[in-house]
Length: 414
Image (cartoon, rainbow, N blue to C red):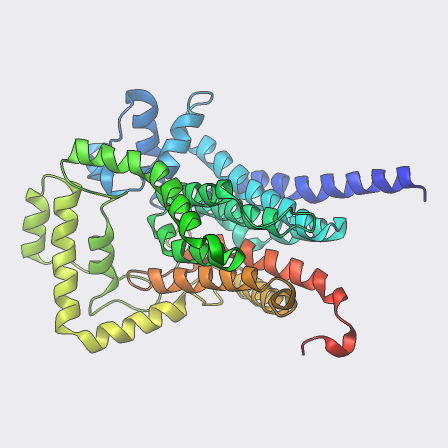
């Protein structure tokens, strides 16, 4: 086969590897409307108010708008400039975000490996990842968060590529901070991984850690700051992104909760009375916070035990309750379990080889995963909260598995 034919085959391979997951996602959306989460209607309502009225508001039956982070509604409202803000539009946008996430990781794999087969492996493994397909078939902000994580990894891959001119420059730090901020607007828990990005900046260029860390935080502030100022102006109180931490504490730490999620326990009458008279999301969340922290102070041993269980739950191998409009089936449960085993096994196997060549990447990826688990465990952990990190695990696995060829068989880690 000549070079022209080889290039033609590669083009066909990339088109099939890239478009197959997209087509699968769009078909999945149409055929599985019951997978939607109950919160989707609220994000859609926020987007409609933004698109039609230009204000961040909810219909009265949904409560205070500031309970919900603005990232996904802002994106849907922007799409509303060219298409109707509807449930179908939201699902298509989320499917495209999910697909785009894998494309970004595939570009990153191409930069660091220079191997078309590795790019195709990332496209197919990530693009057809069953649980990530599921996330992409719902209008949930964690898909946008996953895309921002992919852009962070793209920044790391740019520096790690074989022909990179040297350590990161100031623009890299700003890039990382800005994408951290966009991810936080989608899912405020994204702020948990800020130390991991600072760790990467330190490991890649220790001598410049102070200016680079400062620039990364500036990039983060430039994205999140305007929303915080908006909250201060409209709500008359400081709220960094959204006001829901107190409610998460209240439902995440109580007598009836378990390791997978917060139990929707009956709200005490005294708390109901405070919520009924609350004039803002911040005031309502403060009431939740006080009740939740009161339980923690009265039950410190139980709270510590719950924290440990919630941390472990972040790494569960099946979905647990997903709170969709349909119950989980045994088939879906075992698909999730099989996927988890494959992703974790590939991640650990690849990390062994990648650690010997690019240890800073392994340390950073590990920190992102552990910090997310530790942060979510302060409130609630669920299977889907880990899904934005699974393409990262596949990226580490594919890159590391490619690097195994650099080590003689006798020197390979066992």
